[in-house]
Length: 501
Image (cartoon, one colour):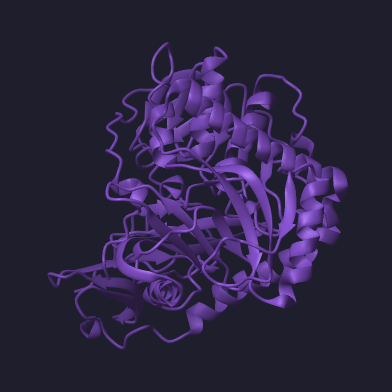
């Protein structure tokens, strides 16, 4: 399988912020240096708060570094759904929060002179099939009623016919990691810090709070858990979120590239946008979403996405390929606010439903308001501890039945290979060694790495991801590298090594 580095990671420098070296005290500790964490930290620091950002890896190397870079308040077919579950007022709040987030990004890009390929573009959700046309018309009406300048159109500007589309003009696209690195650089100094390669493992919710890391402690009045999927389970987020992976290709194509941002209504949906590159625009094609650890052979996902693109464009080369992970909320909008109903000073945000650049920015704005004592016009709707039984009950039941099936069923399923010796170079799988199951990977040189196959979060059995060379949990989306190191939470502990010989 070729390398799976995103265009955003390949075209930005590695950061070199130091890890936490001694116990530190600040006003606010932010766990996670993605779009939510960095935005919140900048807002707080500029309001006079001292901030410490604690990042497991490097700035913007998580979900934000593997986005498609769309900055829009049009999120597929969301407004009709939000209106049915949260009322017309809820839909207006969702539109206002995401539109305001877009304009904050635009203002910061302009006022700070951030070179991040920011370009205003229309956003469209289109239907190829007449069967989806009523849904598109309903979405155009609902989005317009919510306050967006949305309209129905029969002309999408694509090189193939469509039945119709909902469109919103004057949205945007950009290079998310260039943007994030520019913001991150403004945080250290005047009592604020940015610590990389520092793993937060626990948080004491007190007055003050204490964030425990593998390198020391950070004491703060408030803590923001901005780890995409909360690494603390006090709000039972593992039962209210569903992790999904999806895939992207950056293609060199012969002929014109559509200059809007597109998402289809089909299943699986497909995403399109142009991206500037040194030798002209590339075309980003995304899609093939599936639940993490449950999608079958992940290499085949890339192959199907490429086949879809080649049917519609004259593809000269696949320049980049990558995948990402999203947290899908049970009732359709993100969870933002206190980590649990009894939390006093620990806050979180998650469930961005594949639209983290605006939802994540809006979440940072809400958390900033809450921590600084300002009234947020949106936080009541996005409340992380809301419970909407009629809206979410069916999704909650289905998701937790799915989790239970994997928790018990995977333990009873046969191993992926009969013996360790059957693993080929660059192949991983669950094998049995002296009667014990082991997650084993044989690298290109023949060296075998063995770890426990049981996720350290809530003990489901991990699955091998052939495309990314990782162990993925099918229950709550934790991911680990071949040596068992945590790549993505909610797990905070590595998979223990296992003796193989």
